[in-house]
Image 1 (tube, rainbow, N blue to C red):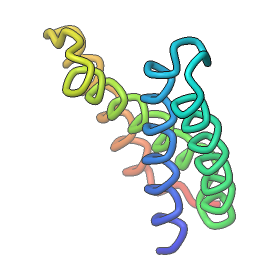
Image 2: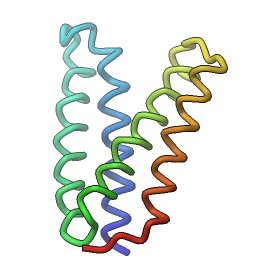
Image 3: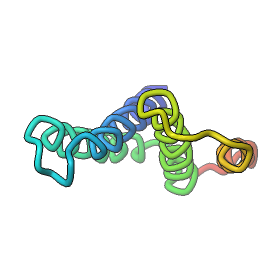
Image 4: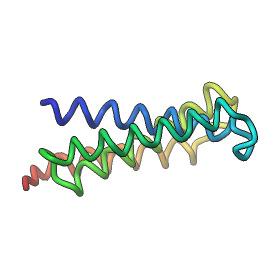
Length: 108
């Protein structure tokens, strides 16, 4: 249970860090750049804690897949990026892939 909490918070930290990349202006702005560094450090640390109890393939697929989908959603909602049928289909496929990997019931 705690491993799942670590994974969820790791995903949120990764999404935060990725979102700050846009604001960092190529690491020219101090605070967004610091947000990128701190967010990724926390994300990888929490992911490493989650991996003590979760299988690598499943945990990484969830971390990367949901992180990608949430970051794309932040792009649409916060940065007003275009959202079209292709982007929706890609996000749906990512989420479906994560769900399918979880349904396999792989244990370590």
